[in-house]
Image (cartoon, rainbow over the protein chains, first blue to last red):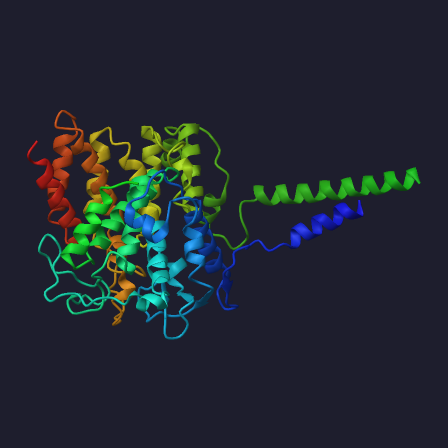
Length: 226
Length: 228
């Protein structure tokens, strides 16, 4: 009986959050809970195929998304991330193994894959060996496929001349686009909503790839399955 | 020993009975002393009768299944889990009553809850069977633009950080984008679909949306299907 009681006590005392991530003490519980839930969602994803670029960046869609994140990010803190709309950021010159969340992460109601798109985009910025995948400057003028100006919803200003683009499929915008496009196309345990959202947001992100060859490579990649 | 036990049990029963009667009595007295008569009416338990107010009468048109689906929706929205499989099982097919409940739910959700609103539109959009279903999407597409994540009615505060904007423009237009995706599925099914013309008209109206993302997407859909 005593042994049974001890077992129950030990089980009750085990941390619910068994993630390797270290949350700073000032990260509110609701943010921690949501981050863990969203990473658990990523960890749960399975796909029967992936594209070659996905294979190169993330490997197969076999539960490894969390390991990919965990191998880059060791700590989680709270920060304003420049204020405004940001839900998360990485500040490489401060600590390139740390991701910062803002209150917007739980305050703003983004679709779940959209939040993960930002988190994985930011996690890519931790890679010191790749110069943190710094962004390219968007061209001037910077127009969408339909000819309209690409604008920041935040400032209302044009994105032309801003460091908010990529010239490679492997940078933060490119890699998160590839992540979402593969979820849209190949996830076998996603709801139709998750797949639809992944398609909506990946199509939007592709607009940030400004090098015509890089964009063409990605479009070819999306038509290929391993 | 037995006598003591019975005495304690009897005392406990008596206390429980007093507590029950007091609680029950308070419910019947309808509300606290400071409540207005209107508040008292709101807290009074509904009594099924022929003189039921219209709103409660309307409840009769919803089946148990409709209400169960509505409860599942509430549960999923509260969980913040977009990968809840019940979206594709228990909420895949909605009858007229459930659709009405979901439309009511949509209108109750604050405009800033873009994902919650879009989730409801996604579920309704998979069940477009009548003109009224398309009419509801048309209403959604005609909503005023949501200008910021904090408050749809006001402009966002200024910041020089374009990096933090990633994905925001799409989320702000999310319910409308989902509505257009749903209409596109009607158009995909071909012009023999009795809802084809109404869906095309609705997409055409959306080409004039003040929300750039919506107008651009509507123009692309219109161009793709106007050849049919």
